[in-house]
Length: 284
Image (cartoon, rainbow, N blue to C red):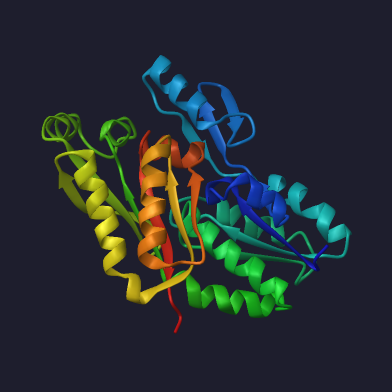
């Protein structure tokens, strides 16, 4: 048992086996259909999410864990004498970070540290794994936070969204944009910039064309990549993810190119068959 207990939230999209192996605590966000709240990844999985959206024709609402949720999650480890380091979903996207800060104030100074990833999905997960590995090398919480501050702005997050339907249902594009985009087979590409989801560009044509562009963008940046860990993260796009994994592994020679599944919160904003490539730029 390490002196530091790492926490993330359910939007980090790390593979379950990794969460167990590295003893990472997960605080779930909430997904709400009507009057029913579901804990992301605990009470609801993406296939069930999509089924409910198809049945109702509406997207769920999503909500941050409460300060009480964080206090309940952190307390047992503080009682064991461990320090807690929580790496959160971007403060620009959710009140998750702020609620964790509120919770941290209920403990003695230095017992709980809250770090804003300014990212989402495995853009958070990459930072969590940097922290886990630094702790294994004997680094302190202060040293790990300094490392994360250096890494945070170097995380590259780029997703291809397969359909405009979920952006439309979520109020992020108009009915006319959805109709025209569907007719022209336009697929938006989303990046994370300064903690916010921003449209990077659009690909018109087949899904294969969009994936080729995503892959080409990543390959063009190989010289600046930290090739320790690269993620392919997706929502119900297993075959495409495996294919991207094979190509990136061959092209980059990375220590590991891992595939992970997007959880319900990420999926509810982007929709099925969304797929992304996430990595950090080298600090050297």
